[in-house]
Length: 518
Image 1 (cartoon, rainbow, N blue to C red):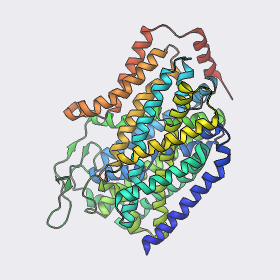
Image 2 (tube, rainbow, N blue to C red):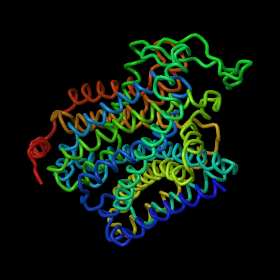
Image 3 (spheres, rainbow, N blue to C red):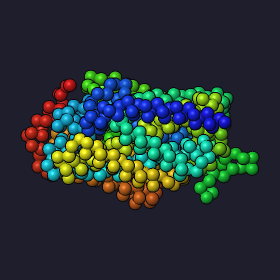
Image 4 (tube, helix red, strand yellow):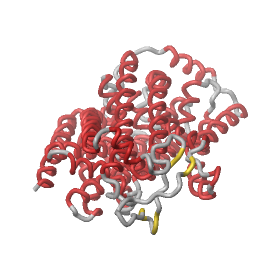
């Protein structure tokens, strides 16, 4: 009966989300500019909170608490610190310049558009490379969202994971078809409120249930490395499952070390923000540059509260439900466990809607941006330059469906770890687009050749480091974003200096963007 009531609350929430899509459907379909960028009409609150909601996804409520639950404080908190710093610096340095430059550069409405117009290319090589990388990494990203939905519903209702994952994916596809960017951004604002409310409510309720902060500390202080900044807990595993003592307590081995190199590697999550299309598009879509400062403050505060709450929920969850989740993948359900066990049914339904909100707010962004990259930048940019808006949007929806289907196939594995899937896609975007975005905005000497080399170097290095270098272990076992980001920066500088300096037209446009005010 309780699960039925939870489902009713979640259905009401989904109905509201669909209502938003229907409300904005007519306006979205007026033009591709409205569908893909909302006509540059976002206010500061919607720009800020939709950027963070679409960025954080289900991993904020499931992935990050899961890491804290299974391995302790250090890995989760250093990741959170890196993300918070990246959020603030990105809004501080990139937002105003990109907003201005995207208008100056032929009023660009997608990230591939911006790079292509920034370098005045005729052959559309940058646009094509950018669009293809967006398609690859957002397909992976969307699959992580589908995994979140599958884990949520199978935990609540006991229905096989694959059925629930596919049902959630279908809902996201239908919603994204309806309303485009403006509906997505408006609903993301609402979803950001639901997410942060759910996190705070579970945090407070969990602390009370566990007996207060002192009791949580007493319960976990004897677990080696669990509460350390510079150590990490090591669950005793057998066949991928943490072992229990005769009394039923989870067993841990000697604490692992969390050294300087590991900290730098984990903090490098913050570098990913400079290349996140779903965040960068909000910078382009905000109504006016004068509202960006307000948006930065809103986004930073939201991130600080949400990240702190997510880490603490994982820690408190291990104290309150020590042997409930015995694999790294299953640990990502701790938020669901605490919600359904500690909250009244209606509030539990709202908390579950928070996970659904996080998933929807991200997956619709990923699908929309990926489909726009192919339809707008490859289909219209390369193959049918005279395509009408209706043709572009029709192709966009076909591509959206295809990408979603591939994401569903990737997400079929019920043992997928959300945090791991997100980490790879995050690294891909951060290294592919982060360096070239910074150099394009702030270094006038950057050339088209340097941009192409940097994107290829960063994107390919993510794969090489992840699958070739990290398995070697030791000093090589660092998050692939850091070496790939640095390698991309080096290639951009070297290739730009070796190639012909940008034309006078490009340099004049660069200077115009520095002082442009709307």
